[in-house]
Image 1 (cartoon, rainbow, N blue to C red):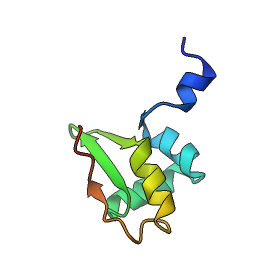
Image 2 (image 1 turned 45 degrees about the horizontal axis):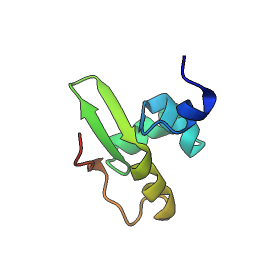
Image 3 (image 1 turned 180 degrees about the vertical axis):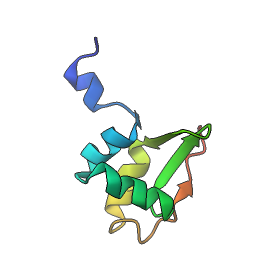
Length: 76
């Protein structure tokens, strides 16, 4: 099992992990995805993932006003 330190440094996050990282409810994260206000990557038709580096940039950008949402990460 990964240590807590390794888990905290995880670079690809689920919706639940992204919500915790951003200190918001999971429903709000889904709302931001629907509005394309937050960077994400859809995997298939069911799964949504977030890159920690994209979320950090989102947080630095005054809650996304400088970033357009949608599938932004090029390394997927």
